[in-house]
Image (cartoon, rainbow, N blue to C red; front, side, top):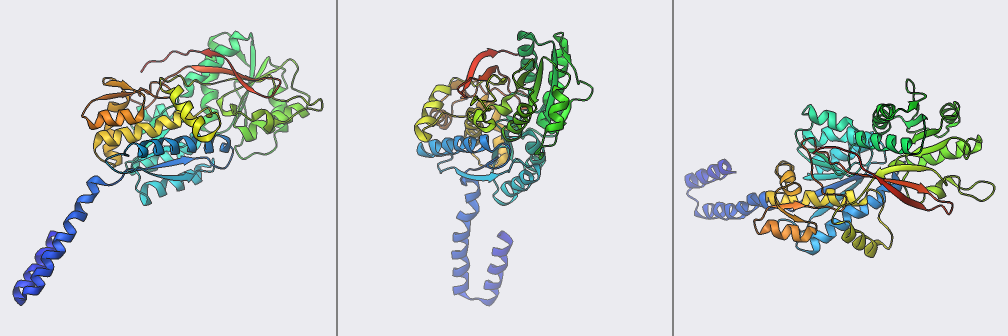
Length: 432
């Protein structure tokens, strides 16, 4: 811009045209404020969540949580003195669609951070795009251990975080549950993607370490994410009559698998069905349906899911229920926290850019600093120049150097009335 002004000024001098010189001066005054706006631009964050597809039962509710966080923040002054802009994309529970959507958010919309994706396979497809564009990606529910491994290699350059613990811990929780229930033999039936494969890899050694036997350990039964029929897979998993079948699935495909098992006469006998948080959806019993006697087919399944026990959980639930007239879902507190960390880091950085946000994530989420769970209070403290330690709805949200958090796990089941009930909590060790 400076060279352009000098060129015009020189020409004006040569032409000795006073009016043109005045015009150039006026243009300069108009251009200078525009050049300064980049440092005070509004914060833009994106959501990359499954509004459609196999995880749609979770995605819409997670989207509502992120939207509620942004509305709450904007109602108390926004970030950097301006309202936060939320730009939402549907990843369709498909890696290719997720990658395309992340490219749009990062390269067209120029967001500073993204909440998502939900599924690990989608996050795997999107994260390199985020890192390349220096966009902070915080997933509320991508739990595959592959992200920890890649972070240790330095692949993410500090731009990847998640507010749900990795499945290395859930595999241990599932093994503890199976042991506590007295199951000595378990077969595995899992979705063939990063999520399913990560849980398989963590569960098998954990269960064997407790003295259990995985009957198909050398060749676990897997199904394609886009499969629609499951008769052969169900027959293979249940065929050896193990004490339990560990079903690692999402609601749409998981409900079809349970229906197929019922139709083959394999449910309600000697083999228990164990599941993971991928099936922990309030209406999963209705998705699976009822038997000829009018009883819910899914009644009696048991599983594990990351437990939301954060200091701000009660306040979040109240706000969510007041706004949406329903209970929050399994990963809604994690979605709220992911968005909260992004806005707090941007305020602390005094910048909406991904690079600046990334530098402040750990300082607003971890010790030291004043513990605070209310996002508006946290923003106020940051503006006063104080250090904070955000205490979330899903947990304390203390990230380690790989971007991971640790946590405990709910034990849940479906009762005879088709209701989802939490019956116990399993604690799994882990260090920050």
